[in-house]
Image (cartoon, rainbow, N blue to C red; front, side):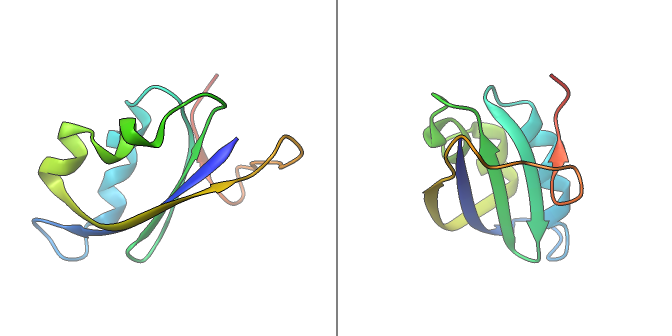
Length: 89
């Protein structure tokens, strides 16, 4: 698994970053999402490309992606519902 870390700004409401969550869960390969202020962490399944998130038309139409990076998580990482909103398998 890998974690995509996005620094974003809403194009509408300045405090509406958390509304990105349902948009992200519509993208194939998104396993979990966590919003911390203007930072959005997206856990991706193995083989899922970060470009699917960064280049998504819906995400781009509502949010400006200021910066992004990918962190490899490895197989032993437990993505728990206490830290992330999870998508049902």
